[in-house]
Image (cartoon, rainbow, N blue to C red; front, top):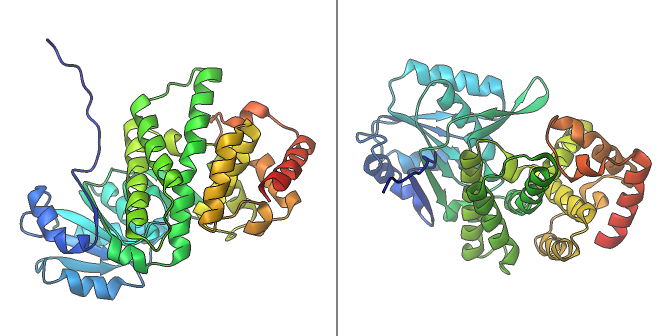
Length: 351
């Protein structure tokens, strides 16, 4: 009997545990990424020096490079250094901005990339997307999926609490994204990939249902796995649809209109709660709102630092940030006055 299947571009190895960084050399060898350790190890600011000293005994032949990442220019400079060397692969160790910088540089030069995450600010640790700043704008670039992903929970526990809360917001927002994807299928015939949808929804639901907090290792592992599943979901779908709906449109609008206000995860968490309210899903609205409250994430525009009018402006601007995408915002096609009325009702319900 013929077997029909598809190839999924997912990491060869995923390890989420304490001390994962100590397994780096073994993962590189066992996964046939680099048997001899001829790699570039790229570390970000903060814990970079400490991590570099920990890595050196494992990978005596590696070059350790430092970056203060987050922009296309920095990624291009890193790419020039990688091109000048002779490496089997590049290892990015750090938080989201460092990982995104390394993914972009590695993809531009055809090098396998390994992620070692020391914080959980967003789902970029395993996704085929790099979000970088260019000429004052934040742009998402398609990149290669990491060949391996290690999440060291010891370092995650030491990272700033706000970064972890941001990751919680990003993971939970997938519940909004998959609802928008299904809406687009019903209304526009947009194809939905059931596997990608299941991956994104499963991870988000696990975080939603977990009654722990960021001080507990089991919760951090659940969050890390959810972010990995979100990244793989995007690789399966070939787009960001399983993880980016009206919630992300609102976040991009907030960033464009109020630069520096809130983290990405805080923005998409608020956007997801508002879109759930617009959708009329009262059960998810209550459960999502309770989870945001439990983890200290904003439930109202004011908690993020926006007035009601400023949030109305962001919601009105949101659809233009992703032309062609169909979410609850495009579906409702509300006028500014109508948005203002819904925002006022939302604030009363969420507050």
